[in-house]
Length: 128
Image (tube, rainbow, N blue to C red; front, side, top):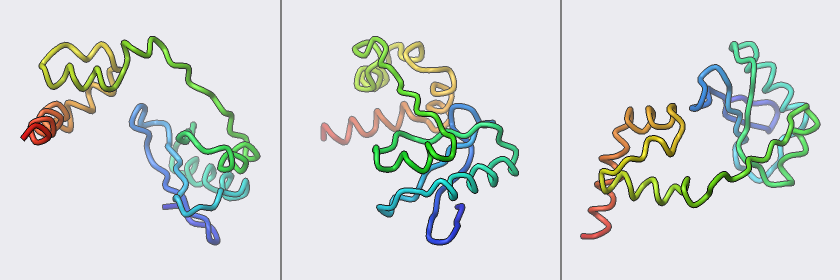
């Protein structure tokens, strides 16, 4: 947890690339100031991170990040029907091929946390 005045954010390794930090504002209704965003960048740089990303933000939450030098990069949806999370979960439940539909790091993480069995168990409990 990074704190400065009344502002707070979580910072730590991003799941997709552990050398990149993920910065997430604490959802208390206030947008982060540019000064706090810069302070977070300094703290994360001191921890060895060279890049920082943040999750999708509402327009009113972006200003502090933009003023601190962050860029907004919209992710375009690629073949949305093929790469649907619903389709991927359905394939997991039915023991069908799904790994080629996600990045290797995501597939490894799902396996690491026994995600397939967890999804299959949830599906069974939904049907009971």
